[in-house]
Structure formats: C-alpha cells, structure tokens
Amino acid sequence: MQQGIFTLDTGFVRPRFDAAYLVVQDGHGAFIDCGTNHSVPALLKAVADAGMKASQIDWLILTHVHLDHAGGAGELMAQLPHAHLVVHPRGARHMIDPSQLWAGAAAVYGETVMEQAYGRLRPVPPERVVEAPDGHIVDLNGRPLLCIDTPGHARHHMAIYDRHANVCFTGDTFGLSYRELDTENGAFILPTTTPVQFDPDALHASIDRLLRLKPEAMYLTHFGRVEQVEQLAARLHELIDAMVEVATRSADATDRHAQLIQGLTQLYADRTAAHGWRGGRDELLHWLGNDIELNAQGLGVWLDRARG
Image (cartoon, rainbow, N blue to C red; front, side, top):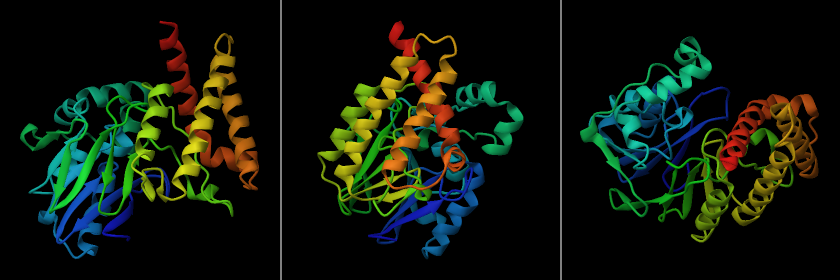
C-alpha cells in the first residue's frame, strides 16, 4: 500500500495477471476496475482488511468495459450500498444493460466458458451510473480523481489521474507489464491491441497525454505499479510502430493470422531478450501466448477496417 492505494489481485486467469485497485482517503474508498464476478469476494475482503465496511466505498470507477476489467461490476455494486459506478459515456449503456457485452463474448467463447470465466453479468441500476466525460472529477472525500479520455485500445477507455499521489491508473492504455518478465533492467512492457477498436494514432496520443501529467508511476491492470514512466512510454511507442509494421507486412498473406502470430512472437522474443530476460520460447508463450493471439486478432481487425 502506497499513499492509500492498495493493489488487489482479482484472481482472473492466474496470479499477478489482473489487478483492481482500492484507493482510500480518510475512511472513504473507491475501487478502480473490479475483475469478474469471481473477484468480488477478494475485493470485499480487501475492504475489510483495510479496516473499512462496504458502506464506506463511494465509487467504482471503470477504465473501460472489457470483461476482465468490468465483468464483475454489477455483482460488486450490489454489495456496495452507497457506491456509484463511474464509466466512460460510451460504456455506460453496457453497464446498465450488459446483454450486448455478454452476447458478443459468448458468440466467441460459448456460454459455458463465459459462465466459468466471468459469471453471469449483472446490470447496474441506471440511477447509480455516472457518465464521466473527459475532465470529469470524481471526489473521493476531498481527493480529486481526474478522468481522462484515452482512446487507442478502446473508444470507451479512460485513465484516472490521482493528483494526491501523482499517479495514473491506466487500464490498458499504458500497455501490459507482467512481473514474470521483469529483469535487472526493470519492467518489460508491451502494448495491447486486442479486438476490436485498436487505433495506433490514438494510442500514441493517449500515452503522450498521460506523460504530460508527469506522473511518478502508472498502475496497470496487467499488472501493478510501474515506475520509470518516460522510459516505458518510449518502449511502448516503439513497439506500437513495430507491431503495426508486422501487421502491414502480413496484410496480403493468405495465412494472415498465422503470419501475425509468428511475427509478434518473434518480435516479443527479440525484445524480451534485449531486455535481459533469459526464458526460452516455450516460457515466453506461457506468459504471452494469450496476448499474442488477442493482439493478432486486433491487428487483423485494424487491417480490415483500414481497407474500408
């Protein structure tokens, strides 16, 4: 815990993969992201461990409505009697009526997998939902939390700047940094281009916008607090361009998805090795295999959209 910020492992997929955060200010609390329905007991335990009651949580703030960040929102809100949910205006309707979110994901993964991974999505009453346009400030008992529109990963994405601690909660805008890939050179970081709204120009701009705040650290959903912010941002910018180059080279291949998988795997293998990570290809795929698949899918959607 630093400056009233608790990093919570939601338990989704594996340890140290998916974080939520509890920010505490003089007996009042706000969650930032929440994981899935299965994460709710751990989040409520964190409240108790902080010496608080569920009735002292004022806010649940979502960076965006992808299910690893927001799938448990309805279930958690049902346990927080005084809280309001804060979400990007483009995401609010999906919290009030999550049927479209469910249908879209279930069409890909199937109902059984969805139930096992996320649990049935629960609507949030509309009167408890607050839309947060760019510049909206959430007042956590006198501690301002600034909501910043940060498209690039998703059009319904926002980051939250905590001026008190001088840190940003970045969702997926500031990439992924798994602790298993840390070396003596610090954190390894890579962008996430998961389907379906990846926009490289917007993502570059969003990263730069967060940098202009000069935060001392970023709190990533995947996973945890990272420092050396300017250095990590430079790597993200470089990798966004490198991933776009991989996509462009594969654009006309008959086996485009396979080429994207191969190109991203080689790119990450080269970059982790240069970072001083000594794991082999099989270990890299253990930690990044799911992200490689999703990033390849997202780059494919981006290529199709660019062609019109």
